Amino acid sequence: MKNLTIYNPVKIHFGAGEIENAGHLAKSLGKKAVIVTGKSSTKKTGLLDKVVKLLEKEGVKSVVYAGVTPNPKNTEVEEAAALAVKEGCDFVIGLGGGSAMDAAKGVAVVAGSGGKLWDYIGMPGKKAKDIGKSLPIILIPTLSATGSEGNPAAVFSNPVLNQKAAIYNPDKIFPAISIVDPDLTLSVPPKQTAEGIIDVVMHVLEEYLTGEIDCDMQDRFTEGIILTCMEQGVKAIKNPGDKHARAQIALSSTVALQGLPNSGRAGAWVVHPLEHAVTAFYDNIAHGAGIAAILPSYLKYLGEVKPDKVHQLADRLFDAPKDIKGELKTAFCIENIRKFITDIGLSDNFKDLDIGMENMEKFADKVIEVGGLPWKLDRERLIQIFKDAF
Ligand SMILES: [Fe+2]
Image (cartoon, rainbow, N blue to C red; front, side, top):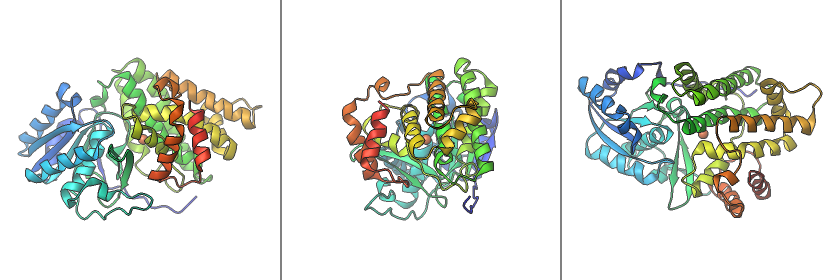
C-alpha cells in the first residue's frame, strides 16, 4: 500500500429532509448565490422554487442559471459565470445531477478567476492555467451517481474540440457544503437510477482493479459499496419509492469518491477515460450507460494481463465455485457483472446503444489525445477493448 493523505473538508449534511436546511447553510457562505441547474427537472419537481424560497427566508438573494445540459459544456459554464459576475454573486449552488454539480464547480472557477473554462484544463502538450480564486460552492445532488458532492473533481465537454476532460483541484473546487437528501432522488426514473448506480460502482472499481494489491481494508470497503449498490440498486429499480434503498445508494455515491475507499491504491482510471472518449462523440449517451457497455470488455482485458482482482471480485462478490480458476474465473466474473448490468435495465454492449463498429479507432485516438491514462495501454489494445465492447 502507498502512503496516503486523507483530506476532505466538505461539510456533508446527509439524510431525509436535510434540504430544509438549505437557507441557513447558504447564509453561512454569502449574500447572493448563483443557482446552477439543468433545464427542466428541478423546475418540474418544484425543487428549484423551494430552494429559492428557503434562501429568501434567510435573507439570501439568488439568480438562476437553468441551462446546464448532460455532459456540461464549457459554454454553459461560461454563460453562468458571466451571470454570476454581472449579478455580484458571492457563491455558487449546484442543484441537480452530476452535470449541474460539475458545472457549478466550473462556474466557481471562471467567475472567481476569469478567462475561459478550457484554460484551466490540462492535457498532453497543454498546461492548465493555475486557478487563482474560486467562489465557495454548495452542492445539492438530486441523483446518486457522480459523487461530485464529496470531491474536488469536475468533468466538462467541449463540443467544438470534441473533448471531454476534467479539473481536479483539492485547493479550489471542493464544495464547502453538500446537502445530500436522499428523498430528492425518489423521483429519478429507473433508467437514470441504474446509470447512476453503475457509475458509483465504477468509481470504486477502477482503482480496486488496478491499484496496489495489499489494500485489505480499502478492498473490503470497496466491496461493501459495490454489494450495497447491487442489492439496494435492484430494489430501487423495482420500487423507486423505496426510501431505504435510495438512502443507501445516495450514501454509497457520496462516500465512493470521498477519498478513503481509493486511498493508498495509486490505481489507474481506465473505463472512465474510455467512456469519456465515447461520449465526446455521442453526447446523447449517458455516462453510466457508456460505462456499462465498456466494463465487461475491460474486465476481459484485465483477465489477460492483471487477473488477481478480477478473480477476487469473482470470489467475494459472486461466490465463485472453488474449482474454477484462470480464464474460467474471469469469465465467471464477467458473466455476473453482465447479469448485474442487465438486471438493473442497462445494456452491456455498444450495439444496443447504436454505436457502430466504424467508431472504434476514432475512440482510441480520442483517448490518446485527451490523455489521463496513467496505465500503459497502446492504441491497438484500446481499439481491441472498444471492439470487444461491441
Ligand atoms: Fe463516473
